[in-house]
Length: 289
Image 1: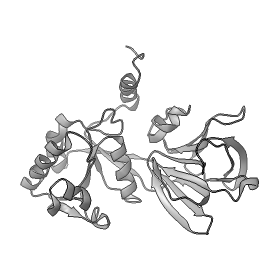
Image 2: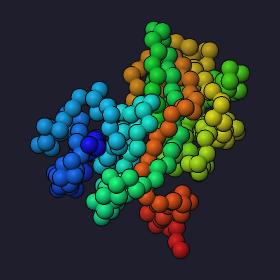
Image 3: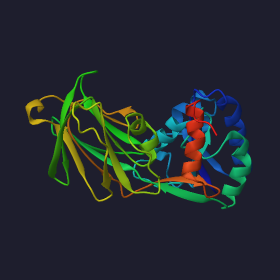
């Protein structure tokens, strides 16, 4: 019997109508359904709720219901796990989501029959060290943001690449993105669009106080280390991964391309640049045919 975990975005207007029908559809096909416990109780399907530690045990795939933020949440929950993710777009843009609501049930019929393809995307492995010596490791699908502890204050950062000093930056913050994240925050800060088929990191400074304000592209073998300039050693770094803030008190961050991937489910070969152009037209009225 197949097992599926559903991760819903509770604030999407369409969810109360779609979710009960989706659960019934899956149960009618002898599929075990799991949801995060809190979301299951709020949606009135508490019998399907499980603790986060059991969400992804021995499951066949994940259904992410929402917008791109939901895909990023799933990536954070999965950590180092590589489990296929069916992304159902209930948002406005849904650049990361592969399926629209009208495709839901025909697509799931095909997937349950094993008729689907997958596309692997690079993730970042982010290792942070705190001023008290503690260390954590986490993963990101889009980007890591390094900034100062105070809003709107310039921060001086020393950047090492493969343990060799590269540059000191005085800036508002530093974005380190994956190719998937190249269409998100990194793009807004002036970074390039990058095909998701590549395995690289994209380091883009935010408002640097320097003539050197260019993005730096690093390979999958490179390791970045970013920390406060020596003169500011006592001041902590603020770190967020895919928009999720990590607790305060970080002294240095090490970032590399993860050996594990985020795996999207899709039916057919999709053209990244064709989809990008379509989404750009949604974002910007002035991009015309």
